Every structure is written in C-alpha cells, then in structure tokens.
Length: 521
Image (cartoon, rainbow, N blue to C red; front, side):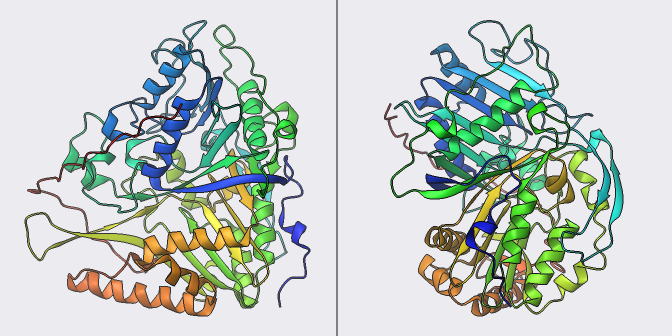
C-alpha cells in the first residue's frame, strides 16, 4: 500500500540546508558533456571559482581536443583576476589518482603567494558506533572504521557566471582522464587515456565509464557554495601562511529565484565532529533516500544507477518498496573497482556489507531487476569480430516516480554505508515530475538503444518497463555468449562475465576533430 506521506515529507528534514524554490537544473550525462560545460563556466567566470576535489589528476583535460588541462584553465583565470580556491581530500595513505598535500609550490600556480590559486587539504574522519536499521528491519551491529577509511568524496564546481549570477555543478565525475567519456562509451576512445600513457594498454585496463553531473542555477547554488566555504575554512591542513579564510561571495537568500524554477534541496553526508558548524554531522542524503523509498508502493517506479549496493538500510528499504508492489530497476557496476583508478580506500568497501539476510530477498524478488551495463563495437579492420566490455557505472542517482509525484537525487553518494554515514558527500534532490521523467527517459534511451519517446512510454508503465529491461538483459547475454552484436547495453548484474579486453594488434581510430565554439563572454 502506498505511503500517505505529505509531499514535503520527502525532503531531508535533518539536512543542513532547506529545500529552496526557484531553481534551474540541467542533467549533464557523461564526461564529454559535463566537462565541456564546466570548462566554459571556468572561462566565463570573472569573480570567483571554488572547487572541491576528491580524486583528480594535475594534467586532466576537460576538453581533450583542445589540450588545455584543468589547472591550465584555473591558472589562466587566476591571472585574469578571478579568485580561485579549492579544497582537496588528503588521503591517510597513498591512494591512486589523488592529489595529496603538496606543500606550497608542488603544483605550479598553487599557494605561491598573492595572486595564486589558494588550496587547502582536508583529512577525513572514520566512524565508530552502532549501525541501526532505519525501520527495524535488521538487528543493529557495531562498526569501527578508522580514519584511514574516510574520504572527502564530494565533487563540486561553483563560480560566478560573468553576468552577475552564479552557477554550480555537483556530481560524481572525478577530474581523472579515465572518467572522461561520451555517451557512445567506445572502448577504443583514446581521449580517455592520460597523457604519457600507452593507449592500447590503458584502454585494456580501464573500461568505459558512465556518470552524471548536475548544473544548478538559483538559490540552491548558495548552499553548494556554503558547503565549500564550511569545508575550506574548516580544512584540517589550512596552509595559513599561504591561504586565507573564504567568505561566501553570495548566500542562498540573496540569490533571486528563477521564475518558473523548480524546488531543489542540497543534501549532504558529513561525519560528526568534522567542522564546528556541523558538529553533529549531517546524514541528509540517507534520510532523503529512506523517505523517497518509503513513498514507493504499488504502481511506482524506482530507478537506480549506482557504483555500489551495500548499504544495509537502503537495501532493506528497496526490499520493502518491492514488497509493497513498486517496480525496482537498478543498474549497478558489474565489478566495482575492477580496472579503475580508485585506490585502496574504496577497495575495502565490500567487506563492510553485512546484508546476507536482506540481499538475497532483493536479488530474487519478482519486482526487482538488478542489472549492469556493457558496450560493444566491431573490431577495427576485422570483419565479423566484436569487442565486448563492461561499462563502469560510476553515476549515483535514484528516481522514485509514483502516479502523482516524483523525486530524484544524484551527486557523489554511493549506496554504501560509508557514503550514507561518514564520507563527505553532496547530492541535489528535486521533485519536478515532468523533468524527472524526461531525464530518466534520456538515460534509458542511451542504455536500451530506444527513442526517448519509447522510454517515456515505458516509464508510464512500470511493469512493462521491468519486463523490458529483464528481457533485453537476457537477449544481450545470449548475444554475448554467441559472439553477436547485442541490441542494447543492459545485462544481468549477477552472472554476466564480460571477457577480458585484449586490444593487441588493433589500430586505434583517431578521435574526430571538434569545432570550438567561440566563447560568449
């Protein structure tokens, strides 16, 4: 039976920031779209650019074809008088694709005195305490995670727009070349290869990657900015001799709502005792997930994309939604961390998932489809042969759609105990049902190889959608086994074994040139 909760009960009441009216939100699917927009926003900024970074590379190319690294762009804007600041995760141990505290001078143009980029590094917290069921679905158990397992996992970019306004980007894509990709997810796309690396070897090791960013305008930008200021000013390694505290250039209440805009809430995970203003921590993302799932019942659709699937409480609530009759379609990474550049902090996450009593109920439920993504393309110059690969799902979003309302959330948070409890994370959430249906349709069109209109038709009929996804997954598995071209990209999460990528002897196709559009400002 569907929940009778009032619509405002979907929001995270315990979160630091309230839902705000009058915002404009755009979904940016995959790195090509997201980082082109972020690159343009860097160059349009005239007053400030503030970043939060977890994983990153100093030579990351936002638009690979133009050869400008992210730090090239930031140094250029700083020299033009823009206030450029960043707060960077300081891992407790050597971790692949992070930028550890370099002390002033290690990164050219960073912390080199007046007129340089100001950067602070921030070590993360661990967690010790009881992990309790949100609705009494399982017995509480005690956990002890040292700080070396903590991560400041947020990825945000906030800047003025050069026209008196401000814009923010929040999502999951790290500024690491392997995370840059296009909706084609071509396993031979050399633009995903870091400078100086062997292209064939790198592409063999690193699968294509699907991810999402959200671009935000309106009062909610002020909350993304407030999160940056709190973290920057409270960073554990402030480099006081080279940096100064930040003052928010604009606050949410001072940003004029956009006429006809939508309601947005910025939600976070912050560990307790990390920053003075949030001494009790913030678990708004977890609350929002639980509220959204509790609203799902008969006739509802729950659509999930996530890298992980081992938060005991969230998995329990997915099961309860399925028991009430909701249809649940979850796209999950087939082999988390396989072939990626995530490092040891993420590698140990699977060991904390004590959901043996819940997970089988979800995996075998008639109302649930646990699926993954793959991609296929012909082998260059070898007729009849096909390259199969997983597509690494790094996106973290969920939409719950009922017959009368919807809520969608996305950002940096995984369905993992760490993300929901003590890693630093930031998501946005919104309730515009038309926008949510259109964006889910856009994602389904990419994954299923159907038109967006066909995808919208499936969204309106959750039972048909569940059947469609399961059937395509079965047909694609059979095609993979027979060496044929699949019809789409959806496969069963359990039981699909993508072959090892072996590109020996292949001549890589050159990337297509891109015509640069003159910047408007």
